[in-house]
Length: 241
Ligand SMILES: Nc1ncnc2c1ncn2[C@@H]1O[C@H](COP(=O)(O)OP(=O)(O)OP(=O)(O)O)[C@@H](O)[C@H]1O
Ligand SMILES: [Mg+2]
Image (cartoon, helix red, strand yellow):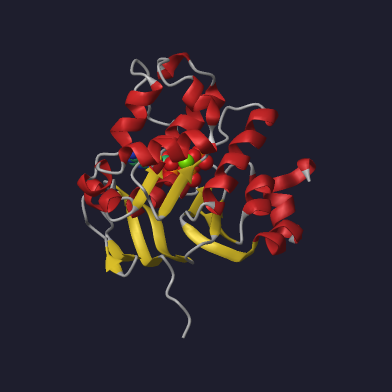
């Protein structure tokens, strides 16, 4: 029997006030995979991630994570269940140090006891955070801040890490470094759901990808399939391809 996916979203509808953004969205994230979610600005990618992590209440549909229905659960309960979200814009406490930001990520009671172990793990994956542990987060470079935001989410010992546009605002070299960091996290056993404007890098990394257009899933396939797809190349990669 096939193992059930770590995350399964079925028929999800959600939005803000009177405006519905997501329409009957279904997708699955297999355990151990990297899944990418791509689409144009305003397609609803961040709204989908926020609904999955409990920041927005779904109007209808199912969200099953690790065998439990999490639709409508509070964000902190969802983090405690093993799903961490690195939001668009990172959400760091810029006047606090690197170490303090990381410690704040370890708030679910059951991971607090393992805090030192988690810190050692993150410092090993990204030594620059160890070197800068006493520096204020706001004084670090954009790339370092992104690594810190990811590191803070990893402090909650997630089985699924969802990342919203981790390469946003970063130069090409540092983007490569962020992607290497994500790959190392994946190699260490974390399942990844990734939203990226950098569609080529995302599709190269992803085992499977979903394309969202005006709040609906319009296409899905392996990363390689979508990279080779003419429609995708024209619509999202264009002259960069
Ligand atoms: N807080 C909000 N209140 C009302 N409408 C919102 C809010 N946040 C987003 N929207 C609207 O929801 C739609 C989807 O936005 P969303 O941020 O999910 O898109 P996205 O795919 O993440 O886009 P981007 O690539 O620009 O990050 C857009 O029309 C946007 O204007
Ligand atoms: Mg977004």
